Length: 309
Image (cartoon, rainbow, N blue to C red; front, side, top):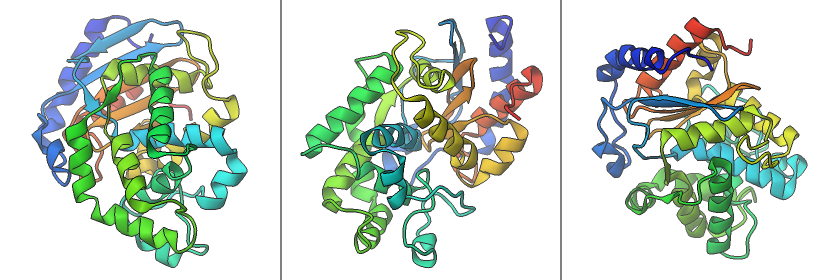
């Protein structure tokens, strides 16, 4: 375990909380604006099934962009990397996660990677299923198995709030549809994508999912292979290069682990062959990452030297 005692982790959370006042909760999705920016919690789940936590780890939050990693894993299992990467690239971008500009200037006109919104929409469009409900059921079942929690669902209020305000995402979909990157009905895709982003869990659930990636796709709780090793490797690589939006390079230097953030304040961290980390801190920095969560990971990385580099 990274900390010798739970009190050590509690102390680090209290120290990291000092910066939460410097950020703001997301308001462009109206339902997310109700969060308390002073919240900060963390759970660490090891591959030998021990857990350490601090803060209110039972408080639920929506995955938002963290779900992009999970949908990518499912779609790579559905189709294989060769098919998926015909539609989505593998390169990081210095642009914001919701930028449309590279779709216009990059040739061929496909998203640069699966962690920006355009790429994530293209990935979600590839989830197998004859109907919207079948696709959704497959994705939710996969997430439940990753977290070993069959009660995980989604927040309908946030899904509706996102659906009603997702004009830029719709624009990206229609732009990509002319190049056959998006193949299915855009409104059906928007319903699926907003539900995907609104999947709701707490920090311990997220840490358990992180632990599956830390174990190369093997669930520590059941010893079942949930993700093939090579697909887990691809997902972790994207988390390093693109997982923290356009702060990914700085994050790699300062902290140095695969991680994915979401604008609800979640961060999933992966320390390979050791443990998964689940963080919730809804106060965001200017790039859309949890300001308290990043501070906490910096403190942990400096103290326990878990950078993969």
